[in-house]
Image 1 (cartoon, helix red, strand yellow):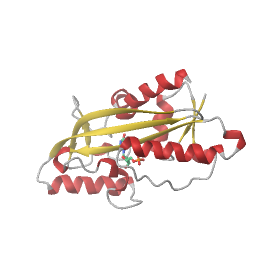
Image 2 (cartoon, helix red, strand yellow):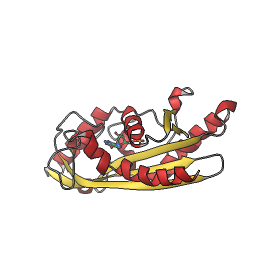
Image 3 (cartoon, rainbow, N blue to C red):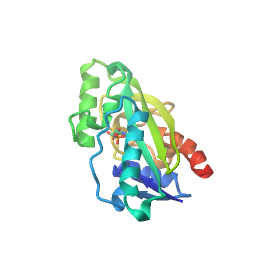
Image 4 (cartoon, rainbow, N blue to C red):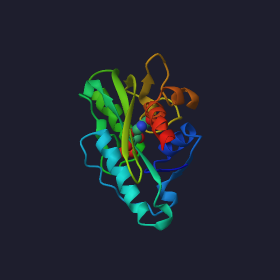
Length: 199
Ligand code: IMP
């Protein structure tokens, strides 16, 4: 089955491809021109559905892509000492259109400003699936701590400051295989795969 991803975030595409080996996974920007999608819902699930519906609609205007299955991930990090920020605003925490590096640096600064060296935090992933007939959504979470510094070169986004529960290294220092077994996205995708297998 062809699974079209409603994202062009390279980090996410790489992880989803590695976690969905049974499917032919294609980023929508490989099929049609990338376009801006306004994510103005108040939840991860709402924003995942907005992305999946927008890409499904754009693709179904072309005959050859009428029967596709579109999958969108909306995800982010919530930090306890910051009252759950940045949460659904994770992608634009430093500013609209900010790079992963700008967002990471702002979160490190804000944790520092709150006067702690680390804080409990968690990642959330909402996955929406849109097909010609149905819409579905599932969630996954990963708990741990954020630290007020960046360590390691792996992963993407906020990974250099996130230490998963039970580990003493950041996700950017740990092997990709470890993130694959722990991540919010992997957990949500394992539920999504159960749905995909019924289609
Ligand atoms: P989205 O693409 O609108 O869902 O934004 C997700 C935001 O959360 C981006 O800033 C990502 O860098 C960040 N994010 C989501 N998942 C992860 C992850 O697994 N590791 C690091 N950052 C992540």
